[in-house]
Each structure stands twice: as C-alpha cells, then as structure tokens.
Image 1 (cartoon, helix red, strand yellow):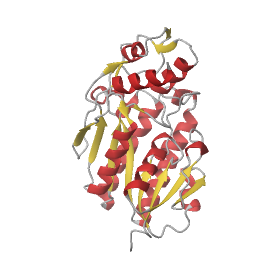
Image 2 (cartoon, rainbow, N blue to C red):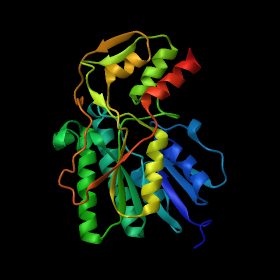
Image 3 (cartoon, helix red, strand yellow):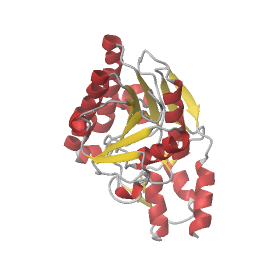
Image 4 (tube, helix red, strand yellow):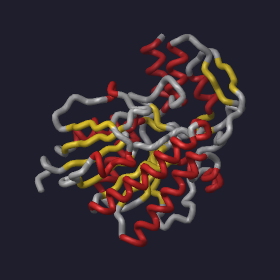
Length: 296
C-alpha cells in the first residue's frame, strides 16, 4: 500500500489537540486524514482546508457506522473524549457516554479491523500516587480505559500507544465557556480587562505543556511504533496563582470545586508498561510574555 493511499483517523479532529495534530500530520506525512467530531467542544473554525482531509460529524460510539469501510486506515488517534474534571460532575452522563461507551466503540473498531491505536491519557487519572483515579467521573473513566487497554493487550495482543497529557495550552485552545482551559480562560479575561479567576487556594500545581510539544510527542510515539506509554510535560511546575500573576493584572478567587487536583504527578499504577517521560521545550513563562506583548 502506497503512503498516498494510507489513512489515519483522528477522533476529536475539530478540537484543540486534534486540529493541531492534523496540521502536523499534513506537514510530516502524505497520509489522508479522516476526522470524526461531535462538535461538543470542537469547532469548524479549526477545520483545515486541504484535499487530504475529510471531516465527519458524529459520536465515537457510532464509529463503525460512520466509517463503514475502514480499508486503508492504519491508525486511529483517539482524542475525542470528554476532557474536563469539574464539568464531569455536572455532565456525568455525557462524560460516561463519551469516555466509556464511545471509547469502547473505538477500541472495538480498532481491534476488529487490526488498526493501531494512539490513545490520549491524562495525568488526572494517575496523579497523587494513583489516589486521584477516583477523584472525579472524568478521572475514573480515563483510569478504567487504561485497565481495559492492558487487558486487550494480554487477551488479543492489541497494539497501541498511550500518551499522558499535562494541562495543554496554545493555538486553538478553548478560551470561553465551560470547557475552556486554564490558560485560555486567563487569556480571554485579560483581553476583556476582567480579573483572572483562580480557584482557591491557588497553590494547586500544574505542568503546563504547549500544544506543539504535545502533538510532536504523539507523532513520535506513532512513528516509533513501540507499543509504549509516554508522558509529555514541562519540567517546570507552576501553581495556578503563580501563572495568574504572570499576566500582571487583577485576580479574583473562586470557591473550591469538587475534584480539584492539588498536584500534577504521574504514577505507573501497576501498569505493565513503564511510562517514558518526555519533556517539552516551550516554557509557559515565555509564552505568556509573548502574549502580553501582542495584547498590551
């Protein structure tokens, strides 16, 4: 099969991470790309005009109906999940439908058609020495999916790569609404000249990682094809309050929220694969400095 005929499928391809990955794949490969997105948080504004891409609207639980002929699809990058901790308490059914029912359909699609999976995991499910895995509906579903993958590998020799994300930020991030990222919220409030909202106590630490470093790691794992677990994070840890202060504007405190994590650390949680740590090159402090120059 020539590379010009090969295809990769990206779930959540109109979202933050998915759209940036598609852009990278277009520049690095000759593969044709299929995107499936339900547009709950993704947007058509993230579409890339290119003949090699086809965008489909739909839920991942219907992946086998949407892609009735999976011929030539060699890999699936599964980024189309519900991905907010606090909102998973408010929209628990939506979280479970996406992260359990939908993801199970993606796993079965890949298993049935012998397609390689690249799965986006999260530090939220393995943080605090594994104790955070039941901290929220979101973390619970993500941790369970890792257990399912482990068993699929044992039972069927299922091939996959797992990449753990750490508070990703950068171009195409969500800046407004309930699914907005921390950095996106701060940027939006700064532009509107509103105080930056910080959830108490503000000492929660995060390893904010730029989107370019994140998708490059996804691409690296896919190309290496080693069936490994990788984490992509920045070496520097910032508290949320420390980040807010970098914007040099007013701050307002919000009440504590359920599921709030106070540290961003990863544990192997008895996984058979060790997690290979990759560190991003782009520092948040430099990113914010550039943002302030452009928006002051």
